[in-house]
Image (cartoon, rainbow, N blue to C red; front, side):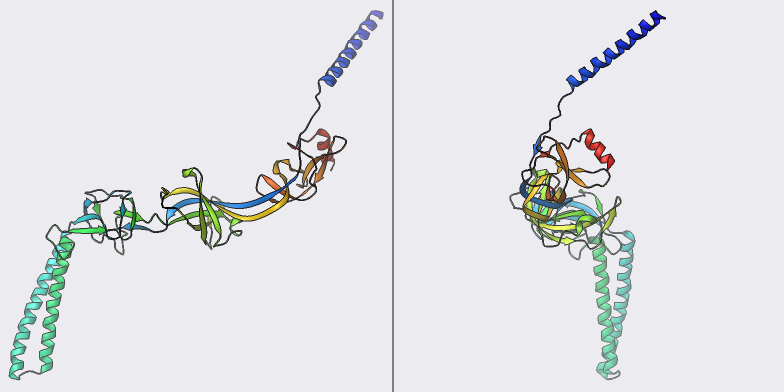
Length: 373
């Protein structure tokens, strides 16, 4: 019995000693938490709306043929500078056999009608000179004769156009495609020997070339419905091109769409702006661009870094931790104003000279206080 008691006492003593050693070890190794601080300062706060889009020429023309045929020759290349009226390509007309036969038949019919009208006219003329028929009958026969000659000429012209593509030239006549505006040839989607279709009411036709005036560029982009109410037409904005080392160009907002379009669950509104581009800049159509539209600008207001602000988990009220004279940090609720994502305006809660904890690292005591709140 005495032996068992001794063993129990020894075990209790060993456990007590281990606990004491662990306590002192943890006490000695626990570091002192130190925090750096920052003070509020006066600065300017600017907020802006960013719209993503592209830079495109304001005037861009697609050249399409007025007759169907085959590309016989292309005299320009993509990137060439052309003037209005310059030759772009030539088309060799390949007539449709059915249309050609129908046009030839119309010529024969018109010829027969013209021959008959001529006979009637000559007969009535002789009768009129003898006084057998009235002047009215003679004039009617003369009118019919002239109309028949006009119909014959029209049928012959139709046959010529269907066969050759024009009223002049031989059987291999070409239709010329010329530039409708002065500018740069952006694209030639066809090659020599390709078949093209004419533009008409039922078909847009084959695009032979695209010409654009690169001296006048516009930005086309989209903004979210949450921001569209903050912008107005006529505002001066900046357009940034990522392809040219984030180069900025001044621009003027000229259009804000009155109706939005839903894309991926969000309503987007189209905007357009005229961009001032120097002729020395090598700007290409289709560059990706961002438009920066300033919507609010406050000068000389009290601000802090937005990273210093914390939010109560239950009330969502913003607060900061301010250093007190005794070295402890005290929570102070603040009222925030304008923010640009980096700094935020302070309307109330802290003053210039207050030391605010950096990193917003809350202690266990702070967490317990929040839980009790």
